[in-house]
Structure formats: structure tokens, C-alpha cells
Image (tube, rainbow, N blue to C red):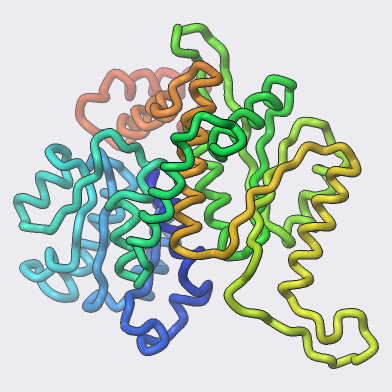
Length: 381
């Protein structure tokens, strides 16, 4: 559901990018992690065929306990596990992360005695990475979850300071808001670290779902919201940088910079006279970042940089909390509610109607009538 990107970003940031290919000894016994966040039939079937179901634990995450995508995949894997280990033992291969009191998954957890973690009632999916939603999978893969929380806690203290020069979340929100008011309505996050590419995905959801709103707090129609864009340095210098350099003046680019990587990868002197000989990939990536920043600045393209000393549980916790507070500040500056998502509900309702869920007969009739008017034998929702 809406929390998958947080889980993925923690895994990608703090575990080797080849984690799932490593043998158990190299992983020190920690679990592999697959995040199935779609109902694409090929992907689900491919993963089903690749897993050893006798040795797999499934964590079904849905705050409401009724998310169609989560339940559909749950039914498929519950059936497959039951066929492999038997109906009575199948429940031991599942845990749920859902509402503490209500919903289909909570009821099923009680009925089948399946362990269930609680999603805080006041925390939406896009804000849930530092709750049980994100911490369970992190812990199962050996991530230092206490370090994550310590980083978030340290950032929380900084975000209490009533000074733009000392409160990074407030400073970031104000810069984003001022440029938004000037018509710069595309917000690009570009980490210069492969391990942080998932953070850019997560940021894109956080920014879009929190700030894309039809009405302000007073009910006035504003159709507000900056469009977040994911980029990755240095990869997207070859796919997006041309647009950022010479396209419309409608983008504010944030570099997410890492001062030091935990290892150095040297470039051997295959050609001793080549300028790259005996340099390192670390130096090259940093030069790519600095070169892009200077080029954008020379072209008078607005950009800013958030720097972390290293990629660690602590700094990742800081990053998560910084952006979560920044988007809350942005909501206040824009006079919109950054914590709801009414725009996605109608599509869910139509999906339920099309799939025959009880209580949605009126919407099904509406869709049937629309199909007749369009003269089509299929629905476009």
C-alpha cells in the first residue's frame, strides 16, 4: 500500500544493493527482503515461483486492513503456502501490520492467531517509515533501527528551533514555498548516491500526496501542489540535466549530497597516462555533482544542497524526519491539509465497484451507464 516506498528506501540505503543475491553467511543470517507493492500478475507470479515458501515470512501491511492490492496478494500467497506446508501451519508464515482495533486484517489476526503489529492511528502510510510499518522489515534485515530513531529524534530537536538558520526543515519549506509562489512548481530531488535512490521515490510520494490538494482549509478551490520529480546523480545527468539546464524556469533542484562513502573504489592504471588513472569513483561522482551544481548556478537555475556526512541509520533517520516536518510546514504555508489524501479515494471506490464489493452498487451502475454512453465494452477509470 502507501507505505511500501519507505520500507524500500531503508533497505536500499542501509543494506548492500546486492543484498538479496548474497548467501546467508554474507548476510550474517539476516533475512532477504522483497517488497511486493503492486498487483501486476507477472510480478506476483514470478516472485511466487522464486521463493522457498517453506522458509518465507510474509508481512502484510495495510493501515485500514482493507487495501485491495494487499489483500489480493495475501490471498494468493496464503493459498500457495497452505498448499506447501498445510492449512494448519500456513498461518505461522504470516504477520500483519494494521490498525490496532479494526479492519479485516485485525479480525483475521484474532481469528487465526496471527501476530499483528499496530499502525499508529494518526500516522498515514507516507509518514509511517519510522513506525512499526518500516521498522519491522528493517530489523529483519539487520538494520540498526535504534540508530534510525536516534537520527530522527536529533532532527526533531533541531526542528523545534524557531530560527530559519537553525531549523533545516523550516528553511527547506520556506525556500520551496517562495519559489512556488514565483511559479517554480516542479521540485526535483537528486541524490548523488545509488543507495539513496529509494529516498527520492519516497520523497516524491510524500510531496505529491501531502501537497496536491483541490481545496484549501477554508474550502476555496486552489488546485495546489508542486510536482515532485525523482532524479539520480550521476545517472540522470544523461537523461534529465539538459531539461534542467535549458528548459523552462519552473524547477527547483535539491541535491542530496554525501560527504564520505564507507569505502573507496579506485580506478586502476590500465592506461597510466589517462586522466582517470589512479583516481577513484568517489572522486568522479563528487566531481559530477559539483560540476552539475556549478553549471546550474551559472545558468541561473535555482538549486540547493542538503549534505549528510555519510549514509548511516542515524543520517537516514535525520533525512526522513527533516522531509516529513518540511512537508507539514509547506502545508501550513499553503493553507492546505498535508495529512489527508481525498483525491485517491474516488478511484478506490470505483475499483471496489468494478470488483463487485458490496455496498458499491450505485457506483457500479454509474460505470455501466458511462460505458453504454461511450459505446465501449471496457471501463476507463
